[in-house]
Length: 489
Image 1 (cartoon, one colour):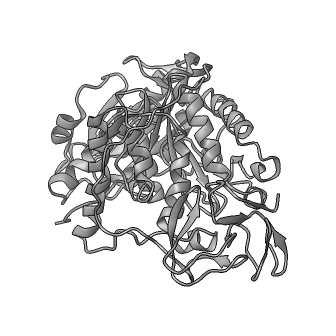
Image 2 (cartoon, rainbow, N blue to C red; image 1 turned 135 degrees about the vertical axis):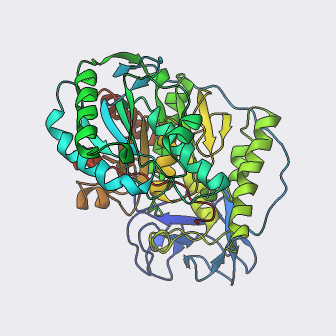
């Protein structure tokens, strides 16, 4: 295929390959070269009229646009403006057949299941990042049996923060301490920080004393020596863990996109949506975040809320994030990014309508604040920004075993859990094989989104079973980034 009209009511189509001025496409003659992933007009669009893609407005024309014209930032502008009022108008969600499968995971003492058996060193404060990294590196010699590795999850926070900002850090770190992908955790404190071990334990709650250990660096003569001794014990304990059959209904998958392009809403995101429906209708859980990238498509999520309470929570989710922008004097709709635009995304509505396809068609079952753990199976919405590492970390904090990360531009990063890079186009997968784990660009050739989603489901089950690793795991690219919202003293 060289081009696609996504919805019958669209007045633009998308070039799947570079198109040249003078070519015939869907009954129009192109009046300009159209880059791959970009849009061209199928009809006259008068100044002020809506540009329609995905069957919805993605903005309005800022000048008269003739058939065959390139449609992009030079002649299209967002319709979004300010904080909106919403009406609860639920739609009927048709039941779909999900897929039930099993994966080989690690059953934890608290009943949760993990897909990795790693030892994590989690600093309470950025001041002890370097000791944490030294301990992790020197502890590699202790890895044996089923242990997948020792990792320091460093960050710059934990002190000189106030109020809700400080609580964000504590909740994020607590979520990681409790994560079932960790077979053992060393919580490494300094001793004088705001988030000292005594204060952190109040947020952390009950832990398994065999698997979660604590060390204050100021209390010992040599924190490296003492830390290594603890990690060695944790490795010995976790090495005896064995994988067992776990139903896919216990799998929690985070949904994220970054470096999106004009193909993302046509290939990768809808393929992930197929996967999400297969998982959710089979009893599993998917988490959608990136609240600023719901703007413009939020009503599609609101009408899928299972009840009025969830609708009200979703309205708060959206409007609270808009108020966050306004509080810092920023433009609410200053999105998409330069890379998005280069890839063919014109407005935030264009981006959001593609982005939200990752969560398929299931009903919204829960809405979570930042740092909250998943407690309800099914499709969850999570409050977090669009930033790649911040949002992916938030998904892990809330319990995601892995993150499906769709991209049209590519990125090498990884969050604390396996981070599956799914390319929206085949050239990216071919250019960056050490970044991309799964190529959804095949949809451009096959046109079969359902088959791509089914293949992704099988890939995820193999990944969860430890049969394969993501590129970020192979290259030890693992990091965290905590949502910052407040004053630093």
